[in-house]
Image (cartoon, rainbow over all chains, first blue to last red; front, side, top):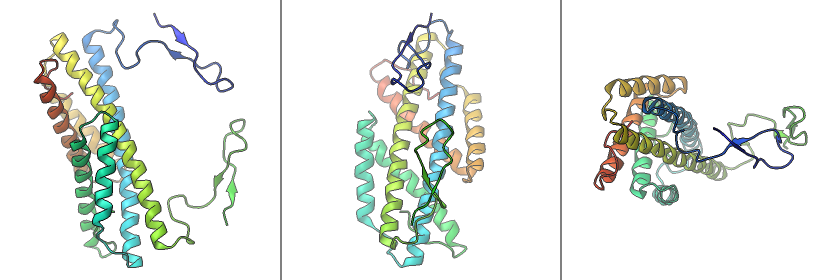
Length: 131
Length: 131
């Protein structure tokens, strides 16, 4: 049976409730196949969010490419890349992920940014460095 | 000069305003170095969101691993992986990303899930298949 806990801030949606219990686990009443389906739906939801965020990130890096090309800013910036790696490693640690994963993830993304810039550079409209 | 547009829903934060103009571009008044700094701050914000979402995704895949191990569900599921690739390619296209990138991204994530499961499997507490 679900019970409810009222922890919504006073004055904000006072009718709104959150189910009690550990929200990170499946209800015991679900059989394993139903639990697996539920987890996979959550994974698919997260994947959709990730892809949309990545699309937004690439829009920003494309703006960076155009800005560098139009303003004569240097394409390469080793200090920026080092700063990004340091930040992502710290974020990974904070999120209980392997810091090496943070670096691998950044390298994966940068490889895609370079790939995109190379494709666009073929049309002569954008610089070829990631960020 | 910033002007404001009131498009907040009636009854919800009526004092709240959003700046007018194209929010996806930089104000012309910023010099290129300031524009670059602003874009990099946005990229860093997106990266932080990505890392936290990935951490959440790995929590789900760890639950999948535990569920499969405890309930005797088969570790491998080729149909599931094909379904994931199809979904991510469609999402990538919808987000104006290269569909091949959707597949590369999924493969990158699955490689990390397998890596995590292998690490945990060394302790004998979890199955070794991604999702």
